[in-house]
Image 1 (cartoon, helix red, strand yellow):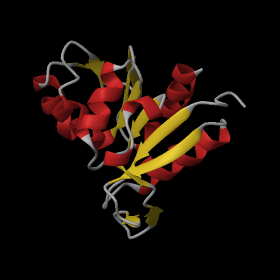
Image 2 (cartoon, rainbow, N blue to C red; image 1 turned 135 degrees about the horizontal axis):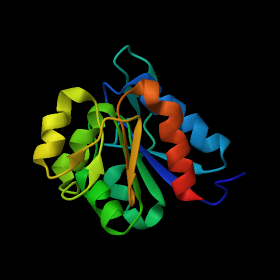
Image 3 (cartoon, helix red, strand yellow; image 1 turned 135 degrees about the vertical axis):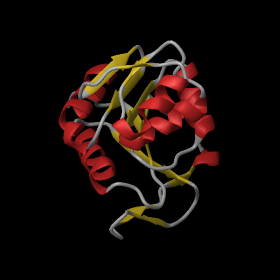
Image 4 (tube, rainbow, N blue to C red; image 1 turned 90 degrees about the vertical axis):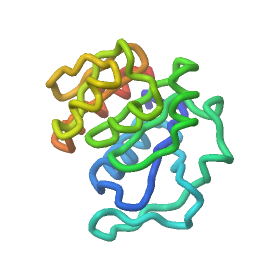
Length: 162
């Protein structure tokens, strides 16, 4: 398996997007990565349509040293973990509205990135160069636009982790 021994944190919070959570969850597992669901401490989280996801571990109980990558599906996430992973050269991957997390974490200045068009101005105002394509990799930052781009997004994450 191509990602055997790699550790991926998959962030989750209520109102997550089903495809942006479950497709990478199973794709990373399929590739052999150990996937740890990281949330705020709830036993379960519910998607926009009420689909439950496991609570996994609380963000304050893990650190960047525990992972090779952190995957941010659209929705809320934990800024310290994201910033620490980015600063340590770990893969930080954000799709759709999750682009707000790198904005708030202060890690986009001077980077090329993409996101859902609704938050393009926020990404640009955070110092990134916006590129309208299905996936953009700039160093250890991988961004994507929408759930339709998930196949390319997951391929880019797997390639970066190899």
